[in-house]
Image (tube, rainbow, N blue to C red; front, side, top):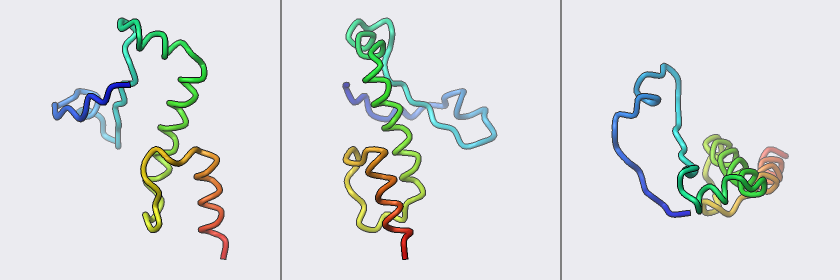
Length: 86
């Protein structure tokens, strides 16, 4: 997927909510390449796992943190188990 970077704009969903919010645009059904990816179960599973890992990593302390994109959800759970085990 192409990285379209961050767009600094007053997005309604982010501006009007009264709770923490994130807007993630994964692709567009009007784009044939994006559509082909979005209809594939494997791709949607991979995106969901990436979003879940990103949210979970917000709560890690950052020590010995691996680069973004290198954790799977399974890896992250194992990492948390080893960090929390005395």
